[in-house]
Length: 66
Image (tube, rainbow, N blue to C red):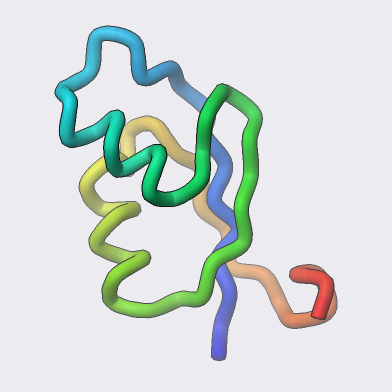
């Protein structure tokens, strides 16, 4: 399955509560934090909710550390 590398590039300060909660659900706490998640409908929904705060890249299994 494909993987997505998700990096927070903007702050959650002053954002709506649901956007802050979505960042936490993805495991992002501060600017510059990155996580690798599977590319599925749930992850795509999270990313779509806060796409203005994130940088998203598709990565291969080798780059993801598997």
